[in-house]
Image 1 (cartoon, helix red, strand yellow):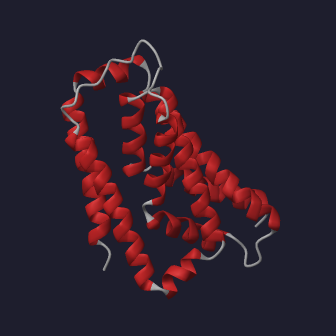
Image 2 (spheres, rainbow, N blue to C red; image 1 turned 135 degrees about the horizontal axis):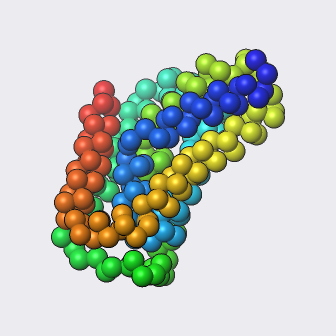
Amino acid sequence: MNNAFILISIGSAVAIGAMSPGPSFVMVARTAVASTRKNGLCAALGMGIGGMLFAIAALCGLQALLAAVPWLYLTIKVIGGTYLAYLGWKIFRGAKQPLADMAGGDAAPAGTASRFFLTGLGTQMSNPKTALFYASIFAALLPPDVPVSLMIALPCIVFAIEAGWYAIVALALSSAAPRAAYLRYKPWIDRAAGSAMMFLGAKLVSSAK
């Protein structure tokens, strides 16, 4: 296979994986409607960086390491699942907390942009299955001797797809209509989002066997 075909094949698989519903989508979607467009885009950037780091780890043989040291994989799953459950509990617990209507502007408290970036990064990195997803795709589609050009291009493509998709989500859901709907139904939306995050976290922990 030539390099262009390999990149297109891997990029298509990564795009499908990124668009699949999961904790990352829940986190970015809620950030976009509950906070500001800037913070939603910062969360999307964190998702992109996290995906790129997983891609680099996969290229460096993380899959082989986790297979050789089973307890390490289980530990990462427990820690990641606990983190997701914690984020979900925070969202659920704050469901009744009033939120200022920011539809008229994008002002946000100082320092929140970096916090949402780190939350996006942490949410992405909390699921080791993502690393195995990349490792599986790379193992299936990459040649035995990976050219340097692909080693450089793949993490960049993964970043562009992950950050690009979640930026689209952030831009779409930070517009006036979705934000107004969120402010109107905030308690129910937050309880649903928090419950989904807690469920996904618990599912990840319970699968650590």
